[in-house]
Image 1 (cartoon, rainbow, N blue to C red):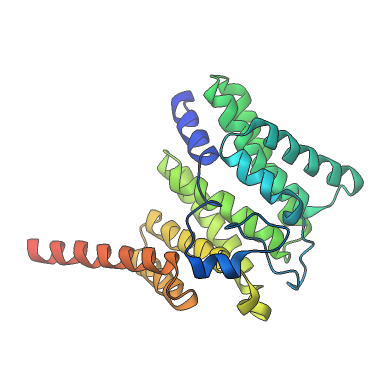
Image 2 (image 1 turned 60 degrees about the vertical axis):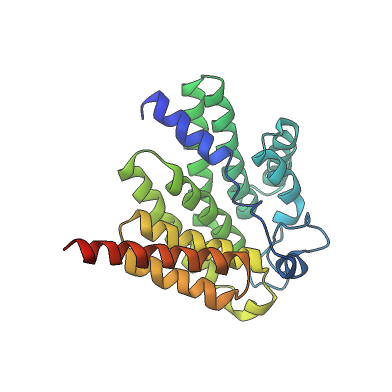
Length: 249
């Protein structure tokens, strides 16, 4: 990848608001876990196959996404400690992979493109390793999906973006399926954000019908939420574009 394009991709990932999007009042009430920062989301503790590592790192992850270098160091340290205790802690590996994208952004921002590429490759390797260890763990699937889907949305190289989109959709659909056992207990923000990102990924892949289907799923899954409002706006925009195209024929 050309240095300038890598910098754009890394910075887009590092500054993404994927975990800090606005939530409505009713979202905040059902989103909050006592161990999670207000407005953020973690999986319900009763989710099958889930270890709960995100409860240890979510607050620092959100701060790191905003450019807090001290929070990033703490986040990476927590992941490293967990991996040192258990080299096959898949959730810790997955979260380290997500955190390494922020390292890539910081390196590219300083002009060190070689370091940025190294961090990106390590991040993707962590996500792949985590998936190979605990493919059925929604805590692994969902952070991998979020990381890959946001990277797909922002990546400047179309072919690579589509590859990340395809991988992200696979992780997201599997992760969402694993939540059906206690779907109602899962945070609104988690469901709304992840399903919206899947819809956007289908748009990036040039699959408008699949994108529309997922936006409709968002509306059905989290009615009245900010995610449902945004999904309806997307559908309205797609309808308007289709109408303009039809009128031009």
